[in-house]
Image 1 (cartoon, one colour):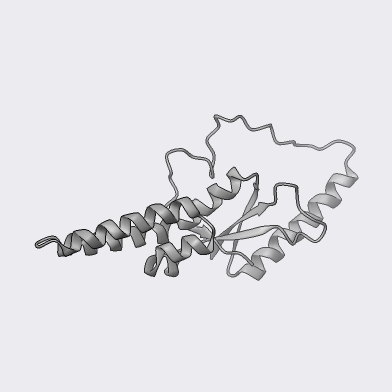
Image 2 (image 1 turned 60 degrees about the vertical axis):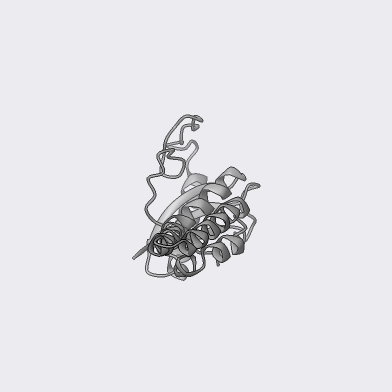
Length: 164
């Protein structure tokens, strides 16, 4: 089972929820092989620039006599960190741009995750219409709160992407 983070666009979801993004919580193989390419595809320009500079420095270190393994291991470490944390970078980038984390859904694939999430939406909308007042309302989040997505300690050890 894969966990999918459900993000809604800054202006709220459109009528058909075509802007709603499901970002899978799993390893990114392309980011392991070519981290700069994966970051560029996802438009994480600053992270891409840092990775390119780090890969160039690792390549230059591998040219030096006696430092060949160091350069290779640094390049591998950069790819591994990007493969593990790349989707975390993407989610944090989207949240900074105004996207909202709505839910986390566990499902075997993307279509099942969409079915689970959207079936829950229709039930919730119908239940709220029947109630004169909601039983539970989420409290407004303070800027200093730590939660699953904006944890400053960076406790994500998994990658978070997976567009439709």
